[in-house]
Image (tube, rainbow, N blue to C red; front, side, top):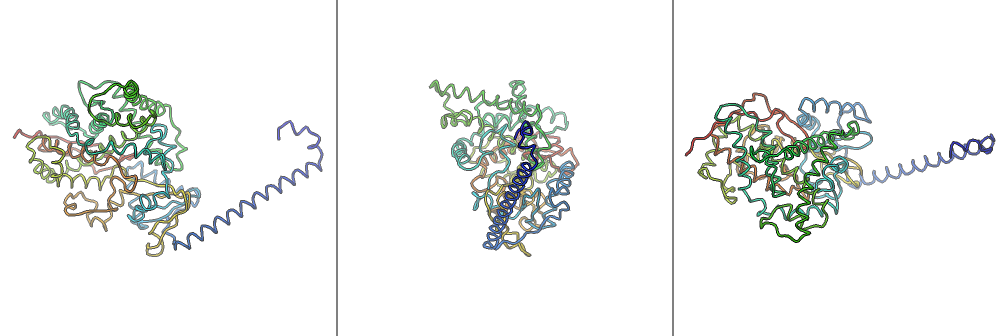
Length: 520
């Protein structure tokens, strides 16, 4: 009805207006009645589903605000600013048990650190869940890549990428070692002068250099004093800014509308996508022209040969770059930080690495590094690169445990419900890892094999494709550090604190003093 319609005589007649008003009211009542009966039918269906599956309520977070859960949100914001957000969740689980619920804006949230529940989410009932809001938040940078998509689109991405993580692709230790050489050129002057150096930003540059060479066959070389160019540093800065922003918006959850995307972030996304497009365009031109490239097999080359979709190639490269750069750099930072505080452990690592007599080991020799692997496993346990994760239920479903008075009964998850799980908190459960679960003790891995209690690379169909690449790079860097430096001493007396974005890394960096090893 337009504004001009009020001039119609029909609407100036009181009896006609009354008829129309009555009709509108009747229609509204009908709509409300239909909605009410749909609600009752839905509720009846849910109650029947709950009864059929013997679901029982899980403990509930004691929220004072029953709708917005503002008390829960504000406490989370406060601890996020204090860099204790991960330990706040540990406290929740310690107080309420391994599975508890919360309601926020009418949505049911189930939070769990029960391995059986996480196994259900990630594996046995994999198709009951989706990635939730990732497309909206991460899509502007990552497009339609493997970390953003679900269903058939995700399955296609995984099938496209899987061959590129075969052993012959990840076994190029020489490539990693070349970039470690650039790192050493920056570290030697500090070691010679006895001055402290922060390793964390250097690790971020190292893993960007190795990941770009692994993916594009051309490295950013941001560590190199001779080869680095402004464009490469600009890309590295823009990529970091984009990832940090995505991590923050993900943490805001349903309140992410409070943070509008700035022009700076939009420009950073564009710069990153344009930078990768350069390499894709070059590879595409070679493919279209039928020109042969070098005989070396590398990620971009294989992708271009496997699809006719240039945008798909670009998106997948950006997705894998996140894992290849941030995951490894974060773990290396946490690992070297704790080793700088534990000289007795550093001595054991050096003793084991001495078998290579200062040479770079072959890929097959890495299996001999038992204690070094224990150290990496322990760092992955205490500081998993992705400490928090979630899934959205796309249909009514259940978790096997957490309900009832003893927590042994199934828990109902409604369609649209969100399931959060904390690998960080699960990895610190004393019933799984002992009374000293909060301590860095590599020896705990002697003769131990953990299943779903230990998930540094996720699990199920979406288990990290690049985990072998990440473990290989961490081992090579650890070996080379042990060969090059006899001592690595912490210059930061503060305890580890989180800097939480998409991944978690030490908030205070990795400030150390290095002592060069004497030639054998």
